[in-house]
Picture 1 (cartoon, rainbow, N blue to C red):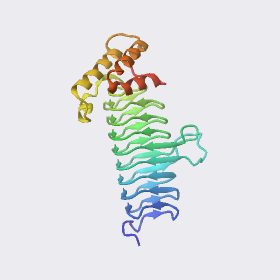
Picture 2 (picture 1 turned 135 degrees about the vertical axis):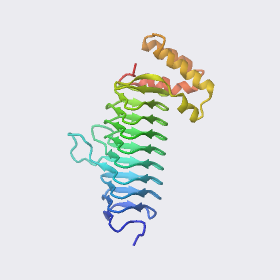
Picture 3 (picture 1 turned 120 degrees about the vertical axis):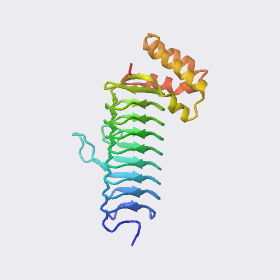
Picture 4 (picture 1 turned 90 degrees about the vertical axis):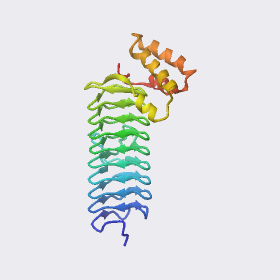
Length: 259
């Protein structure tokens, strides 16, 4: 008997769990689930679908991971949910698998902090070292970069992107792309300055922050056409590497940036 697995847990014999995985009371784990070393699963957790979970994750009670996507076009295809390492996944979170009309999988990277009631819809891609406050919800096909902070009750429209080191305020409604380093706030999210505190906490110098602030002004405070602002930032990035990710993000935006 594995004393790390509570006797009331129901685990399909085909599931692949490392011998160090802990499973709490009344949790249910499906046949196509793989879970890596030292991951802890609380009580009443359901993990289903083609779900792969890495090492050293802590999954709290009542989470639902790997359920079918909330997409009427879904026809039981073997799409995936992939979760990396060292994530904290709190109560009542719901992460769905991908769809064949998207990238076929939903992905969560490493070292993320996902608070209660967070929802990751089908085909979402979340990077590393993010913080999602309570009730943050992503619609399908959303991309979130590294070191992003999502304020509580943030809602993100499908196909939007939020760049590295960006931040959303409480109850932000994101319907356009949010560039790296910038803050978004409001029911229809608008630019709200620089995430300078987040940048400081992650090792950016005062000079680098000032450079990014100048780039912010190019887009939002100098009444320039967007194409001209993008061109100016691309030139600035040649001397300031911290602007490279911003310049690339602006050039590859499909939905357009908040403005």
